[in-house]
Structure formats: C-alpha cells, structure tokens
Image (cartoon, rainbow, N blue to C red; front, top):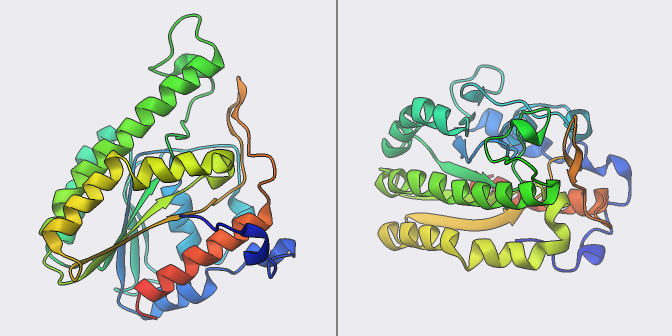
Length: 273
C-alpha cells in the first residue's frame, strides 16, 4: 500500500518541482487511448482532486487548498472532447449517490468500463461546513477530539457501505477483465498510523468485500490492488474550529512524489500503455 523504505525509493525526487508533470504520460495515454475509468467513493475523500489531476495539465500544488467543495454531479474528464479516454468521477454524498450512481452502474454492468478507482481515506473525510457544530454528528459540549472520533468512525462505515453498494455491479460487469485500484488518499494525514491503515483495509471488512468480488469473477476477470497517496499536503480543518487533524510530522513532498509516481506507473500499466 505504501513505500516501505521511503528514503531510498525517493532519492530521485529531491526537487520541489518533481511533483509537477508526474501524470503527463498517463494523461497522454488516456487522451489517445480507449480507456474508460470510473472513480467512486464517499464524499470528501479526494475523488474530484484525483479526476482533475488525471485530466488537467495543472500541477498539484495549484490545487492544494484548505477549502472543500461538494461535487453536485458527475465530473467528467473527456480529454479534449474525444469520445474515448474518459474518466468519470461520481459524487460521493449519500443523497447524490442515489441520483447519479445508478447510471454509472449501468455503464459498468454493460462492460463499457475498463477500470474502477475507489477512493477512501481512513475516515478522514472533508466536509463543507464552517464549524463542527453544524455537523449532524456534533453533540452539545463535544470537544474537537470527541467529534473527530465520531466523525472518523462514521466515515469509515460509510466507506464500507459505498463499497458494498458498488461491489455487485463490478461482479455483474460483462467485461471479460476488469481492474480496480483501492486508493487510500490523504496519506499526509495518516502517515504516522500507516501500519494501522494497512491492516484496516487489507485485513478488515473492506478486504472481505474485495475478496468476494475476486471469488465471483476469478483472477482472470478481476485485478485489484491497494495503493495510497496524498493529492495535497493539507490539514483537515474548518474555518472556525481550526485544525482537526494536522499533516503528519515528517511527511514531505518527497514522500508525496514517490507515492504519486507509484500510482502513475500502476495506472499506466493497467491502462495498457
């Protein structure tokens, strides 16, 4: 899921500008190929940022911000209006999943989709509120720490529920061979707990869902792997409450670049470059 020996793996990424352009070759493949990718996951996990990263020539630093905005519909990166090489990002909030996900499920079941990226972040979901007091989980007198514990627990459960919703449609896909990446984002926030994160996804209830897909489709019909990355080194915060979760001490742009490069290379391989 992550680079075990980050220092040696990242020696080539000593310059700040190394992050820029990492996805340029993948963008070329998507633009000039016939690959259709769907991006799923709950709201606030980084799906829209990932879609923009795959579809835009802008560097990541230009999109790193403390502000989170909910996606209200399906974001589609069409790569200069060609009818192939499409990445569609599904909105993740529950009320919008009911509205937009069924149409994407039909694409998936029809076999028109080559790959799926499911984005989770260990429950560290962003939310579009000015203070935790406006959040449905907030109770009178809650400290930030107590709220955060409740928020993370609920968000982790939401990741499982959304994955369970997606799984039957992956199983039903008419495509002979379908690939999937479980991308655990916001690495910069959970880096100090990375062993726990790895166990949570690879040995817990989430992996039981992945294993059920593999059992139904077989190893020839379903290829899956876990990857992680940080699409922006940014604290989890609200305007009025300040920092809820700070970026991990010692997590820097070399670590970020190394994992983004790993994600880039795996996507290149899966897209048939």
